[in-house]
Image (spheres, rainbow, N blue to C red):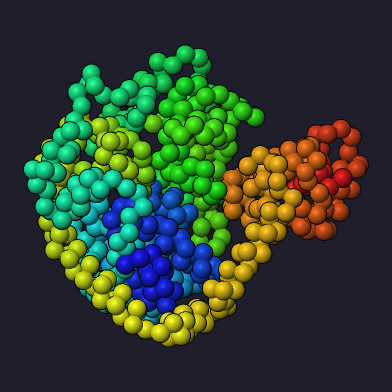
Length: 561
């Protein structure tokens, strides 16, 4: 099934299981669906099975969202207790569409617990209390983490059956373009690894003397033990004093701690010139993705690290935000430079990344899917450097092999059914879904025209500017608030204002570009306070206004003078 076909099915409001091989575009497809929902006035509840996956989608773990916490099973009394928690009940009652990422890592017991709480809160005895449910993931990847040895996959739960899910199995490939390597990965996935595939991999076996420098290619480990030691050791070999970048946070401590655990950038990031680094977030403008490698080659404005990527692109990094959203509102956020040292990392943390190359020690692989996940992070076989390989590394869970055939067959049946439907029928189903969710229907043509109009508007007057400033200027012109502009750019509000100050200094900013970011009454009040305060310091103005307005808002009004 293509991404476009899957997106058409998602838009009908059916309960869907979206799956496919690594690199097939699951994340891209679900992000397109989320954008469409929001354009239609429907705010989805976005969750994930793990903290790391949750930070990738600006959501929260299903455990937090549903209020079940770390419990692996719930009694009736537990369900009643959780359902009476006001913040949990309000969140679930308001929900319309529930998205669960990395479903392969969610146990059947946890899946059922979340379902039970939703039924109790919503007082509807149907799966998840009648919510539209979208499950995303690939069961060939890492399985559920549980304290119990006997843990079932989510699809073994009766709740999975009762959801009547339409399976959308994506079959296109966007990460790997190496046919030989694709053949190896497909053989592992089918449980049909032969001598030929093993030989392909063993050609990438390297001894320590032949291995690329650890400063050039990240090393993936099955266990955590050596990762921090190797990163710290390699950084210490570089000359000079390390610069430290400390994570900033907003929101309740419990929510912030969850974001910190899931964020791939460390709470305290230490860098030196020459350090090998990896980006930990996707650039909204496509300049880098989660997994892009590079080296720190210097320091820019405010001592921000300048990274040169493998293809020669120089990027002046800036803090970006990882947010936890619920019903369209940001409940917590952390801000950090989107980098981490890239000498070593665990296979677990690499899930979801795309890498040009990696050194892998798979001699101690202990979990089904661990070797498959590690290998499938890399785009081409020439980027794989194996220091060790055991049999388990090339094994996938035997139960999944048979189940995968069922998923593929179900997906093909769904594709044929929707292909045979007229466009009018599909559009009518989508209209009914949007109406049922309380949204506003817009045709694809109308959405397309709006994007084109915005593009022309954004392009006007943006020429001859550095890319980051042009992008910020266009975003500010297009958004209604400073918060929205920061979210759209994936930056913190202070960086957006800093960009506007640079634009003003270069003579490329007019009041009309950004005045709409500040309400008129606030602008007038701040303007008076600025006029009555001597000097350029903003603290006296901030305190004179009783702290009612942020420093960023005051800086915006100062730019209007």
